[in-house]
Image 1 (tube, rainbow, N blue to C red):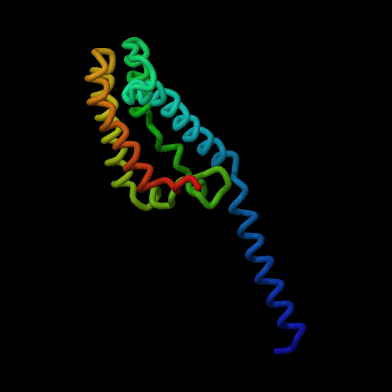
Image 2: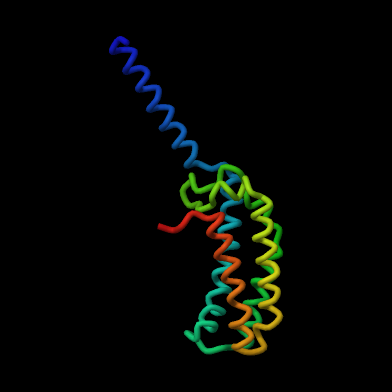
Length: 158
């Protein structure tokens, strides 16, 4: 193959790869809104899990009002319809996303995880304000639910 053709082919390959990488790193407005919404919801989960986890691990004093409110918030968050959050093209291939592609290819598995979160947060909300022992007993399954979903559908944070 002549040198000029080799350079032409190599240039085309490099430009194709660079173009794909550029496209993968840029989101449409719909994709960005969806990613912002789901990350916002995950932030609200974390905001409410933090005091509950602190109490469950005896790192902060138990406060029935705070526990009941945070658990009620978690239960409400778990029931929100997240369907519009999972727009294709917003997986971990784009900056700022840790969503594995499996969330789009395994909708039944994801739905099972979501139902588990709904059940465990409802159980936590029912008892979180009733005492530290009840909080501790109900908090573990919530953490387990979060962990199993993250393991299946979220890229680990490096």
